[in-house]
Image 1 (cartoon, rainbow, N blue to C red):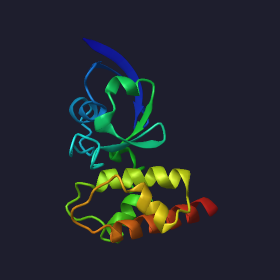
Image 2 (cartoon, rainbow, N blue to C red):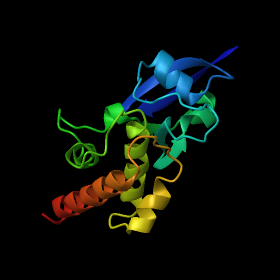
Image 3 (cartoon, rainbow, N blue to C red):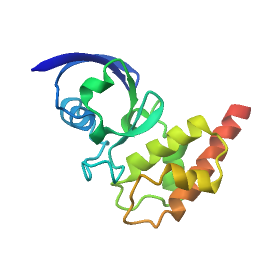
Image 4 (cartoon, rainbow, N blue to C red):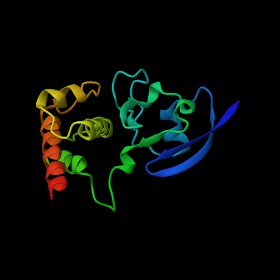
Amino acid sequence: MKRIIKLTINGKTIEAAVSSNQTLLQFLREDMDLTGTKHGCGLGDCGACTVILDGKAVNSCLVLAVQADGSEILTIEGLAEDGKLHPLQQAFVDKGAIQCGFCTPGMILSAKALLDEKPNPSELEIRTAISGNLCRCTGYQKIVEAIGEAAEVVRMREES
């Protein structure tokens, strides 16, 4: 049996029919064609499926689509504005924090949730915020540096 849900994804309000057992990850990838949200472990361990749900970074593989009814969701596809990369995306490029790219969307969204809550995070706070996101390529240092650089850029924009 399907249920109609209404939610806002990347600034657009939509209504859709979803199965009661369909995960938010499945809904975003299969129904909404937002494939930047990756299917990794399916158990909430790797963070590849991270999205921002009502301001908090969540593993979309652990959330049922029906639970997101009435919510606001941000995926990696909604982060850039007017064709310009978000400072986090640009910092990941500039710092070489992307290798295979599989973990990158989840890392960036975890970092975005952190910076929204704490615009001047310490290195420990950055490492803690991304601790639920596994990367098998970079060794994390460049990712941490990229998030720190993006925080600085965002702060400078807000001050001007």
